[in-house]
Length: 165
Image (cartoon, rainbow, N blue to C red; front, side, top):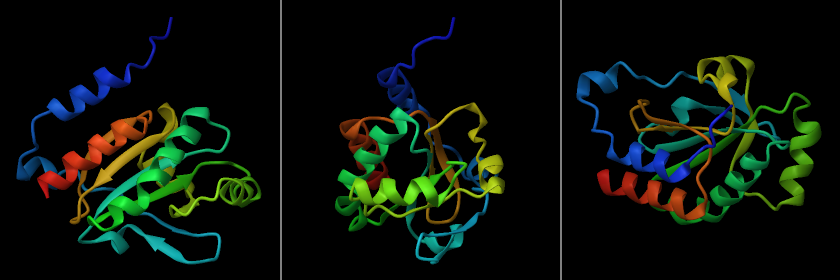
């Protein structure tokens, strides 16, 4: 029987994890990706150099993802001024056909693009979504989470990140 995902225990363990040494961080470069937004703007990992990136893989059909995207939207503008960028990459197989109406219907302003197959493999979305990777300004993947925290948990995570910077 599958165990129930315990967000509190998961986040407590994530925050309690010791900071990685410089050599450990260097070995964890975030995989590069390139995609386009609905209006055709090219987005690459390199575009976020110097900023922390909260990169989320999600889908319109995933209830946890929808709640997580709603939490991201609430915090998107608040943390942009604090050098934290957010990007949601959809893994929906039907692409913009379902993602574009979802963006419109939910008044989303957080940047959203489609997740290329290579990015899905590189960030290993095979174990479930949402997947969140936190990437520092030098392109190092400093944290990776499976499952999405609620708004207050996400706020706590972002606060911890901004205090370290």
